[in-house]
Image: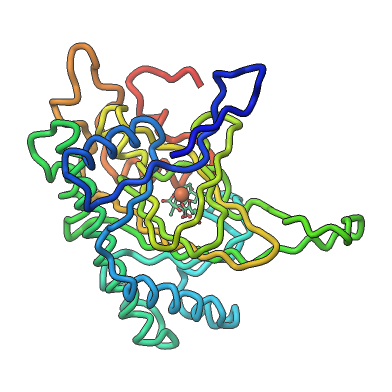
Length: 326
Ligand SMILES: C=C1C[C@]23C[C@@]1(O)CC[C@H]2[C@@]12CC[C@H](O)[C@@](C)(C(=O)O1)[C@H]2[C@@H]3C(=O)O
Ligand SMILES: O=C(O)CCC(=O)C(=O)O
Ligand SMILES: [Fe+2]
């Protein structure tokens, strides 16, 4: 990770220019420490040497580009889970089209006949692989936090009724057609593709093509671009993991920007619990010195709150034992 001092007046202000990078093939004790530190400080990190084959990734990317290249009418017919510009049900909009699938085989079966077998195979293989990776990472996290049962977090997304999702986001290039623009300059015009939010689930595993756009906001008003790396996965803590670590890990706000030159594709796995799972921190993370920051609730309660709110709303605050300052 590169640290650079930018402002000579306020020398404490440092700019982080990339996420921590965790080599999953490194020594286990090192991996544990790095992941815990990254989740406490940034809520985000990248993993390399993750064990998912280039073939699985390339096939999923190719199938996704093929899908989004279809005429809109066919994409709408393919699945009610195809969306364009509208995000959620409460008026949020973005410069994005997407397909959302339950990360279970039956959901793929619900795709219409217009969807090729190749696409179905790519989705199954990719989802299986990222789910396995998510479980491995969650087990390392449990160990790193000293949770006696290393499957405390992973068992939720491994569960047959897990509510996990695979979301394919396509951000076409957006060109500035405003007549007042400076036509002689070759500047990159950017717009918000997917607005600022935190992810509600346990763990998110995101892979994008070689086009930048993802930005994270460790504090209000500060945006740090994430350097694209198609061979790595970007991992982030979701709200439920913040709750299950009693606030030790942070679910950090992020957004995706478009550019004016190249399509961006992100393939995002959201590892979620089953609907009826009770979301509580393990006893080792709740102590007299650090009492529970959240009241117990089910994933169904949390999902209901999520879908009743706007994209940028901070839903986690509804579940705190003590009201939050902001
Ligand atoms: C506006 C919304 C879209 C969203 C559900 C919500 O009401 C608020 C959270 C949004 C979000 C962000 C992360 C994921 O992309 C997502 C699938 C999720 O679980 O929460 C989306 C929801 C969505 O697009 O359906
Ligand atoms: O496309 C991206 O890089 C971010 C997408 C995202 O944050 C989401 O789908 O929740
Ligand atoms: Fe997100």
